[in-house]
Image 1 (tube, rainbow, N blue to C red):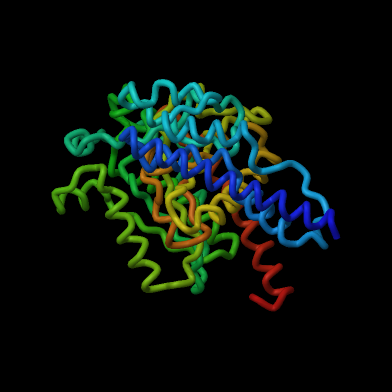
Image 2: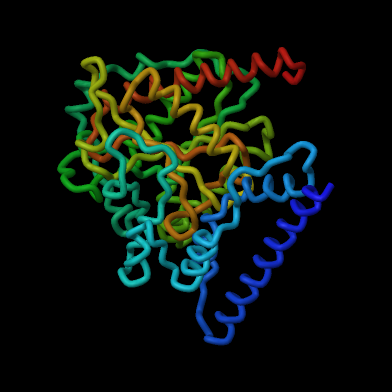
Length: 384
């Protein structure tokens, strides 16, 4: 009985000390007029694992189930680090934070690498920077000669699209194209076209056809985003505002559209975006999950499952999974609308059509396998 009493008092004292400590920190910030941004607090608070924090308090009140508590959640070291980070916005173990407030543009490196693919590190993080409208309007023509040498378009014709559609494919940056498919295109900003044969819309159509051939109903939106933005007098930074309306309208007409795939391409060079596997060249892909929405944990788990299966069968095809906040991207990416929503970045500006198609076909197989396994499980459990 006495040991139980001592056990309870121990955690009462710890709680009181924590309250006093936080009161001291807040008082210091107020009295010294220290400016603390909410983003700094958000980044700093990650030092405390919220799940472990919940379990800690649960254990403290349920000694029957948890007679012993292993490692303490609150330690002098952790609380000192937390106070230091809140006050200075510097995390001693992360070199980026020493310079982040001083160098403009360094915030793009705030991107969190959840799953690092082969060769992925802070030096080659994905960077969101849509070209200005004047660049988008100066699009390149398709290289007709090269397209004629590519496999005929009818090698991927789809069967009849099932009436029950559950996958919605769209393109927030529909202008994103590929240098090898365009005339006189040399640099990354030249990889712009509204021609569906040479931009991400064409890849989206191949993905749609593949899924339809596997019995999955698909709706593919081919909106020319450059023209839509121009009509409204918006610049390229408003693309996600426009695509959000497209997604919401689609779901308003069909609320069975649970799988939302926003297909893009990256601007990285070929040595980063290409992988040879079994003698075949593939355009590498990666996933972006927005952290600033209620569904981010579920969307992250969805991306992890697909990524794991891709890497299992095609090691090195994925550059990984990246988590983005408002500070280093859109932060939401329309992923608050569904818990099966992803941004899929496929290839880079230097990839050719064969490499891109190879990866689209692989991704289609993995997604279809996941889809049918999940639906079979729902049927077995009586939820189908």
